[in-house]
Length: 73
Image (cartoon, rainbow, N blue to C red; front, side):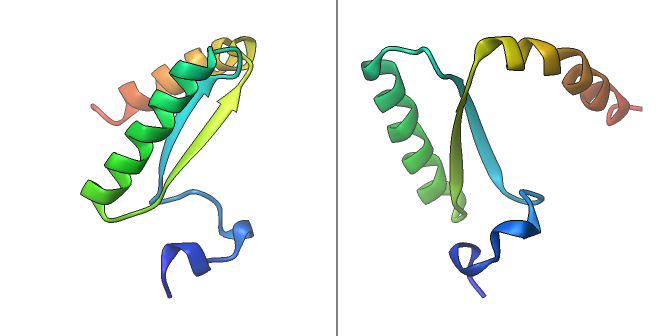
């Protein structure tokens, strides 16, 4: 089964996700989409681009940092 055939409810484990600020200008959003396409080609796996409000990213920052630091132990 290829990645694009997986059910959506399987989550994103093992997938690449590029998260951007939803308020980026159009040119920046297009650059992110181009980057994701190039990364998908190089990695051989789909890349999901998620545009979210920056306040949501700020709220996640501490959790992401803790998870990253836990992996270094």
